[in-house]
Image (cartoon, rainbow, N blue to C red; front, side, top):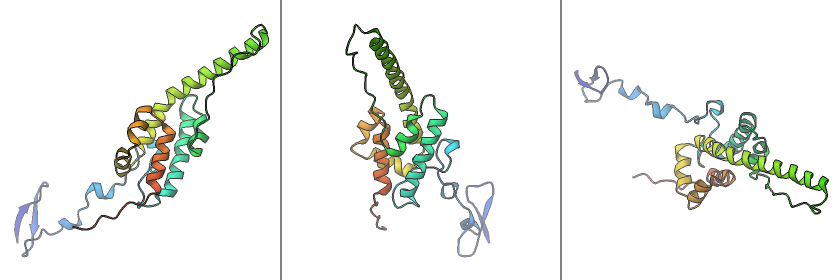
Length: 183
């Protein structure tokens, strides 16, 4: 029996047929480590493409977990708890001017409504980028490749549109991927 180096710290034993003995039993880390996502608190809740294990069911579970995590951990982000699951955030509507500007009660009520609107809009703007990044971090490499290959990706990414991103992920979670023929 002769010895050759297998790229590790020592020589590998080679049998008479020229095959390395014991090398086939070594597992590569990339084959055994399943992607768990970038957020430790959401480990295992990931978005993956169709054809992978439980991708459609996984979409709903992952979305619910992310929604709850965001509502609990992000400042003024409670709207995301239901909004992400429903794939729709409540539209923020700027309050109408008071019907009677001379009526001080209506003016104060309007001013309070404007402050609330401004606070909600500021919170959404602040959280939108964080939620977008969190969702992207929970996508497998295969899912990211699918998203980036979509004709909708550039607009969704530039606008940091969380709901459009989830809808695109949903489309890719349920869409059957073409089987690749062996070459």
